Amino acid sequence: MVENTLKPLLVVEDNPGLQKQLKWSFEGYEVYIAGDRVSATTLLKQHYMPVVTLDLGLPPDPANASEGLAALTEILKIAPHTKIIVVTGNDDQANALKAISQGAYDFYQKPIDPDVLGLIVDRAYQLYELEEQNRRLAAVDGASPLDGVIGSSQAILAACRLIEKVGPTDATSLVLGESGTGKELFANALHQLSPRKDKPFVALNCAAIPDNLLESELFGYEKGAFTGAVKKTIGKIETAKGGTLFLDEIGDMPIALQAKMLRFLQERVIERLGGRSAIDVDVRIICATHCNLKDMISEKTFREDLYYRISEIVIDIPALRDREGDKALLAQVFLERYSKANGRSFRGFTDAARAEIEAYKWPGNVRELENRVKRAVVLAEGKRITELDLGFVADEDHMQTLDLREAREQVEREVIQRALSIYNNNVTHAAEAMGISRPSLYSLIKKLGMPEPGK
Image (cartoon, rainbow, N blue to C red; front, side, top):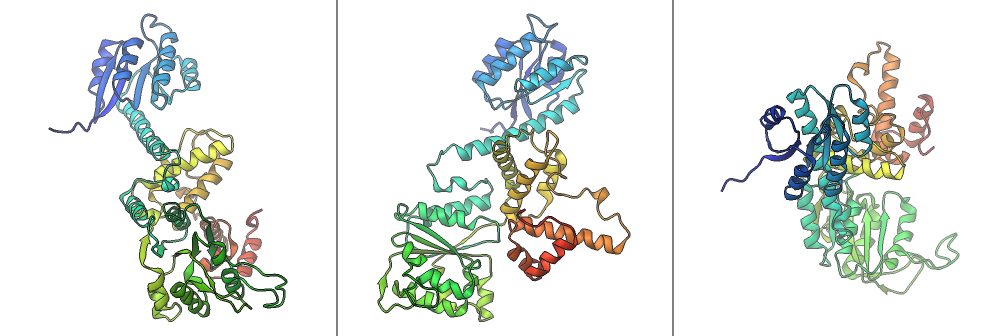
């Protein structure tokens, strides 16, 4: 039996001539025809209809839009997510706008050009599919720790399946992935899927703490252990007792501290700084890094024995550029999320914006995409998010100057903006990625007249 791959489309039209024309105009669609409101709602109850074209002039009162508007209301009651494209006379824009205000997706004015109407239908169907993917991901309603992972690509689904297998075990796991891929989200899912889920999940970013303080953060210290140690303090390892300790950016751990960490992993015993007693700690360890640890082992900056201790299971999180189909889905999810949070309403992205989202390599991965959409929601002035709202430079305006100093400043400004977007306005990490010092980056920002990050 051959599977029907045609996409369903409901055409609500009372003119027999137009019915025949539209029946054969939509390539790739299985077209259902309804001549009035009752037959339209009947078909909608019997079939899955993501998109409907609706003539507002329907019997028994085809000269007015009242019956068509009533049909619009009933269709949205039956299938609230269906995209309805209303078709009106060429002098009836007022009713078309009224239909939009009542929930229609778009409108099209007669006379009908099947090619133009077909493009509108295709776009509506694509948007419906994106929103439907998002609804399916949200439908679990908190039952799965992987709810926060948005995507439907094979690459991300493979990572999720591995998380589901490893989570219930006590295996020490190493999560690998570029900055912005969501490594902590996956580490937390491992914890939530484990028998330790009711115990603490404690996260520590090894790159965010100065080397001389990292040891005391991990192991804790006794009163008087060093200048300023005025009371006994429990470290992150003890805080996570019974639960999970997540060590983010393990590749940035100083080589001297790696030896002490290896001993703890072997014996599950710690000593606080300045202490003499051994403390047993039952804790699961999950590590993450964007570094290539095998290269670091060759360069003698990461211990090989520690690597084998932390990598009983290795989980690779794919970069956004390798997640086919997920860019548009994530962009739509973030648009809905931040539109709601900011009390704004948009009709999606322009075609040019969607093209840029798909073509761009997203070096900052999901974090960069989220930051760009969040910024666009705040700043956009139109009904749709454009490529300029997302921070993409229009080709015709890009690098037209012949002034070498002006061109250099323009490039510097774009690189700084991209780095800050990727690293969520963290100046230290942005400067490191650009290969300059933190003070140098601040000097550049001031010289270029850019706003100070975070202000």
